[in-house]
Length: 89
Ligand SMILES: [Cu+2]
Image (cartoon, rainbow, N blue to C red; front, side, top):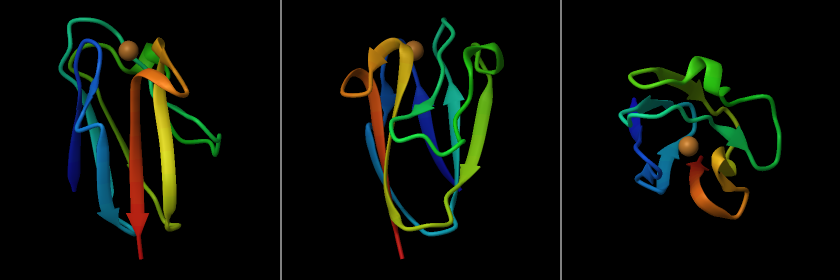
């Protein structure tokens, strides 16, 4: 499993590369609520109602590619609280 931390107001690390099939866990270590929204859709991610301080969210990507995401409360698809997952073969 690979861990990504959400703080106020960035994801750390911003860019992460994982092998296909790896579980990724995001943990909110900030004091405020965040969310995770995929830039290109796809049905993964978590809404702020489920991602308050201390909450975790896990997802496993099963298709290689580049997956951008962002927190819509503190960013846009291209700016602010954004991150990228690169899934390799
Ligand atoms: Cu946020």
